[in-house]
Amino acid sequence: MVVTSDLRTGSVFKSGNDALFVQRILGQKTGRSGMVTRFRVRNIVTGQTSDIALDAGEKFEEVDLDIHQMKLSFVDGDTFVFMDQTSYEQYELTRDDLGDNTGYMSPDDDFELEITFYDGKPVGVTLPILVERTITYCEPGVKGDTSGKTFKPATLDTGIEVNVPLFCEIGTKIKLDTRDGTFAERVK
Amino acid sequence: MDIDILCKVVDNFGDIGVVYRLARCLAEREDPPRLRLVVDNLAAFAAMDGAVDPAAAVQDVHGWELFSWAAGDTRGEAGEAVRSAFRARRPRLVLECFACGRPDWLEDILFGPEAEPSLIVDVEHLTAEPYAADLHRMPSLTRSSLARKALFLPGFSPGTGGLLMDRAFAAALERAREEDGRRALRRRLLGLLGSAGTGPGAAEEGFWVCVFSYERDYSRIVADLEAFGGDRPILALVAAGKSQACFRRAWEARGSPFPASFLPFLPQEDWDAALAASDFSIVRGEDSWSRAALAGRPFLWQAYPQEGAHQLIKVEAFLALLKPFFGAEDFAPLAAAYRAFNERGKDSPDERGLESIGPILASRGSLEGGFRDFSRSLSAPGDLAANLMTFLREML
Image 1 (cartoon, rainbow over the protein chains, first blue to last red):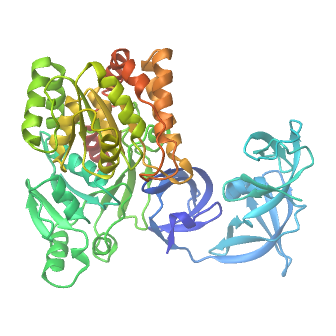
Image 2: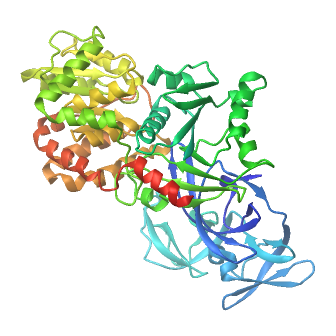
Image 3: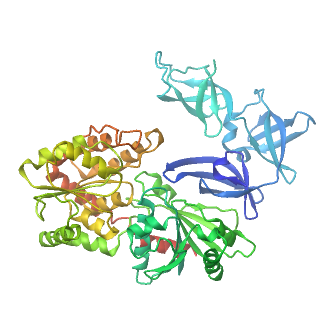
């Protein structure tokens, strides 16, 4: 069994006969009774997407999945092509398949990813919790503000926009938390 | 319609208080559903309603079937009685209050090999945050396609599930609006309290203050009330619970400067009447917060202290809802008092309380209009019980 708090972008879980792939975490709210998380999920079989809200304690069946270590080889439009580092076979996933994870990876990355297979087909990817990305655009850095508590928008080398502390500049390498897309730390 | 309500008491009486009121509101409807309640802390329930036997695994209370959460997981007669009741009449509509989860024996019935279609609705905590409207009526999931699930969010604004309004509280508010009715309400309360510590000078007239918060230092608030009471009689009704000893300590340290009644634990309807009859309230949590808001009189709310001072987000959200109902001059001291009252990292009698309610008391005349208008706005989302019944019918 997996509980809601185990789920992240790229997770696959079962509700009834449906295998559901977590495309995006839309938001979380905390209260006395714990967290409620909103997810965008895709039914792996039908392809249908829907938005749902799960409270922290709900349990789900795990899905029988195969995991293969791969690297992102190249991106062709909305298609992301991954290569198995052992067999050198290539597998394709679409931007829809990958959800928010498209913003956290690039063919230039050294790290390997876990590609999830269901019924022999690739259905999603699991990234390391922290990935390194480079800021390609942001407003100039504010010297002296090292608190990391005030943020500004920044565009990353993958094209997505995230909030980073004021001291960051164009070219700064940062670590990004792939669970929720938040800034984790500056790479030293 | 048959509805099963699940309640787990996390601490104090807030959870069971809301669930009890929810059950009463559902039972008061013209076409009332048949109710079964499963509660993990019957002693807490019994404190609120004397008809509840804290030792009984299965009992009938006001026509509702009441079951002990834990008894169902035990071997022996009591456990079998609980399980067989739910096997004989399988749950179709389950209200899982505050995401409290489900007892193992009920999981077996809902998800086991003999499971039948059911709908589980997570009735969440009250919040003023905008996400209440986003999450309200949102679909959720369980591990089985037979057990559908959805969320239901109470709230102050249109697009949410609204607030509970039971007949007894509505009647108390109605009485409190007229001078004679208010005096009669106060007379009844004073008679009910008897010798519950009411000091000399307590009367039907005068300025009544209800006090019910988490543990805190009350020195400043007692001093403010003392100063305010210089030219008018004051009576503080201090609820049983965490804040009573804190208030008493500060009150005694200042030489018991005004009459105060240190209340025993009151049944829900009597506590509601005390809130309705008061001129100013200090409330906490959820149920008393919503009652104070509906009462339409000035009040200060202490949110449940959370890690990382997350309660401040909830307080700011509530202040954002209040703001349009007040002029800038009145709102500034009100907001300052709310923030100061909630800026604390823990729930402890040693947490210094520097918040002043003096400015609020001084401008209570103009604040009353704002709180009254705010309470009227709360009818916009509609009554929670009615909204919930509509939602359940739609989902079926």
